Image (cartoon, rainbow over all chains, first blue to last red; front, side, top):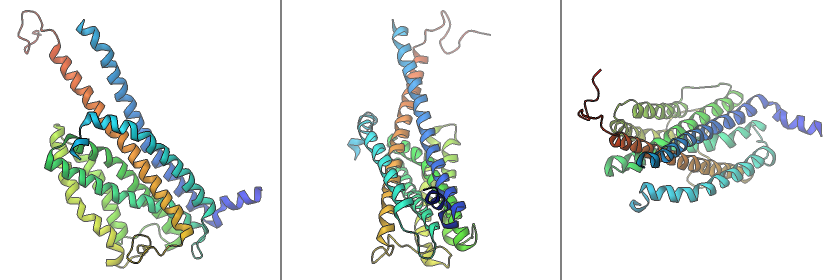
Length: 59
Length: 254
C-alpha cells in the first residue's frame, strides 16, 4: 500500500517534473478563479451599498 | 446574435448558464485528472513524464483559442461598437494570459527531461512566448489610457494585428525545424495518439474550456455591475443639492 503510493508519487523518476507541472496548473487556475471571484464580490458589495443608500437620499 | 448582446439579457442568461458550466468544469477536471494520473498508461519512450501532456496540451489549445476569441470580440467591438464585445475581450485577456503562461511553464518542465533543455528559441516556443506578450500588451494598452473608450479601441486594434501569430503557432512545427513534436490530434488523417491517452486529453480539454467559459461569464458580469456602479455614482453627483446661492459648477470659494 505504502509502496504503491510511493511508486505513484515517484512517477517513474520524473516526479520533479510531473508534480511541479500539475502544481503550477492548480496555482494558475486557482489564481484565475480567486481573482475573478474577488472582483465580483467587490463590485457586488459596492452595488448593494449604492442600492441601500439610494432610497434614503430620495426620501 | 445581436439579440443576446444586450447587457440585461446577458446578465439573466449567464446567471442561468454559469452554474452548469462550473459544475461541468468541476466534474470534467475530476474525471480528467483521475484518468490522466491513474488510468492513462505511461508512454513507451517517455515513461511517466508523458502525464505532463494532460495539462500542457489543453493549456496550449486554450491559449490559442482564447486569443481567437479575444480577436473576434475585438473585431465586433471595432465594427459594431457593441459594449458587450469590449467587455468580453477584456474579460478574456487575463484568462488567456494565464493559459499561455501555464502552457509555457509545463512545456519547459516537459522539455528538460525529454529534450534535455528547459527552453529553445525555436519557432513554436518563440511564437507562444510572443502570444503571451500579446496578451500582456493588450492588457497594458487597454488600461494605459485615461479614457477607457480609447484604451479599448487601441487594444482591439492590437488584438487584431496579433492574429497573424495564430497560424504561425499552429504551423510552426511543420514550417521550421524544431524539437517540438508535430500535431498528433488535430491533423489531416485523424489523430495518431493512442486512444487511452486521447480520451483523458480530450476530457481535460473540455474541462479547461468549461472552466474558461465559467470565469469569462463571471468576469463579464463583474464588468457589467462595475459599469452600473459607475453610472449610479455619476447620477448621484448630478442629483446632489446645489450649494445655496452659488452656481452649481463653481462650488464654495476656498
